[in-house]
Image (cartoon, rainbow, N blue to C red):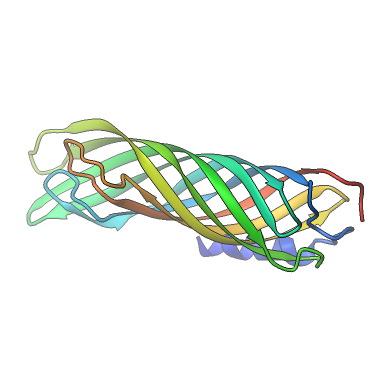
Amino acid sequence: MKTSLMVGLLVLATAAPSRAAVSAGDTDLTVVAGAALPFVTGNVGDGVTSLSRPGPMVGLQGVYQLTDRVGVGAELDYDAYREQSYAGSNSRIVSSHKIDAELIARRVFSPKSEFNPYVFVGAGIGQYSFAANSTAGNPSVSGDLLSPTASLGVGIETVVADRLVLGLEGRFHVNGIGANDPENIRNWTEETVALRIGYRFGKAAH
C-alpha cells in the first residue's frame, strides 16, 4: 500500500499540467486501479478476522462537473483478497471478492490550480461473495451477500497532455450495512488506495 502511494505521488509530482484542471461541464471517464485492505467487524463463522491481506482493486468511474467545484457521477469497483480468521484453537481461511456500484458526489478544492485536491462520498449496493475453508476441522462454507454500501474518500488530480487525467485517491468503504447472512457478516469495512487515469471531455484547454 505504501509503495502504491509513493508511486502515485511520484507520477503526480513529475506530471506537467497544460491547463486549469476543472471546469463546469467537464466529464471525466477514468480507470481506477490499486489495492484493497479489508477489515471485518462482525464474525466470520467461528472466528473474528484478525489478519487481512491486501488484494487488487479495479474500477471504472465517471464524474460530471455541475460547477467547477461540485461534481456528481458513478463508480463500479471489483476487488478480491484473502483473510485468516481465528477463534481459540480454530482457524479459517476466507477467500472473498466483491462488486460495488455507487453514486458519488465530489467537492473539488482549488479548481483552477495545477493540482486539485478533492473529497467525495458515495452510496450504492454491493455483491459480496466468500468461501471459508477451515483448517481446524470445521465445515467449509460459502455464500453471497447483497447489501447497501457507503464510502468516504479524499484524492488529488491533475491534467496532462490537455485532457489526460491523472489522480491518486484513498477511500474508507463500509459494506453489509444492517445485513445478516449465514456467516454473521454484518458490518464489513475496507480501505483502498488507487491511481486514476482517464480522459476529460468538455471545453477546450483553458
